[in-house]
Length: 298
Image (cartoon, rainbow, N blue to C red):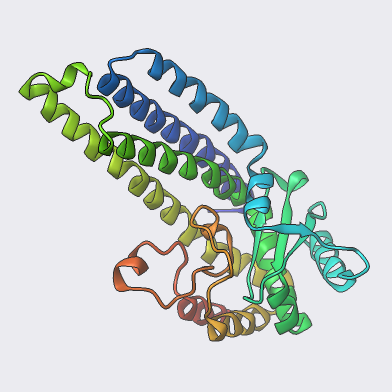
């Protein structure tokens, strides 16, 4: 039977697996760079980058996520009610109080980040604070607190750095090829080398897509779990269900949404009105389904 502790262990193992996968992908990208430019030193550089970025992803990804979202520390006096809600729910959950941040954005949203409960942070938008009742805000904070307790913030926060790095490396490779890079490579002088080079370019194009698919698979499951855990924490599922209804009704993107941090938020920061193809790559399950499940818990 799945318990909180087995879920925590699973997420810790998943994090190390994820970091290993991204390490391999980066090494593969580096090897393709080295092949095209006929310079083995490039592979060594990529190996060093992969190791350093894995360390950064583990130790500093929370700071990167908060900075990317333009979150600032919530003043204890100005946002006293928010601090009280976070503190009370942390005590109920048996967790240390996370650091509390505010994002100046009219779109109602929130996210949790950090490598473990001792280094966790919760950020909410000013739009969320202005729109929610106390019970609805408690539902949202309980949802984010559940991410902290379930230890899935480690997985999600690490993804922020690693997905971004793979996307940057892929774009750099493709642009260098467009501007004539790698012409001196040994793969350009025979038919087999050209075929191999084409396959390499395809691999570079697919790398960020694979990263996004991993990101999506992790995110959708964790949202359902956090909804359920948060409802159990407050013992009032309707609070979160009502909050999600208000978030859905607003349905306008945040001012500065980022694909790197989109999966962290309780709701898609780009809004739900996207093309059918874009919806296939959404990192959040449908809000209607989440509300239905929550109200079925009552």
